[in-house]
Length: 97
Image 1 (cartoon, rainbow, N blue to C red):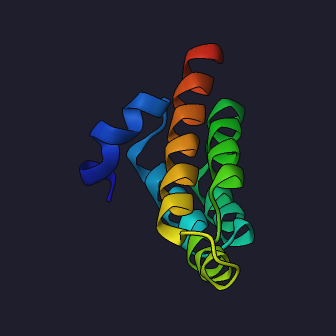
Image 2: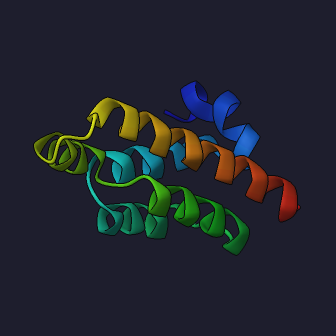
């Protein structure tokens, strides 16, 4: 995964392995993302960026199902949360340099 996602993750100032944290957090939950973060040995700056991104967009499958049950478009909400997560990660990368 490192070689595939490294070019994309550089915009957030993160190593390619950090993509596993995002995928895990986006699809499962915050706690599973924390478990992956612990295993990667990242520094505090990288953890701050990843934690913010996962806190903005987490458990997307479950929360998408909840959104559809209450009448909100789950695809729009999911897209908006992921986009917001990417923007926040990029801005934190710029600010925390």
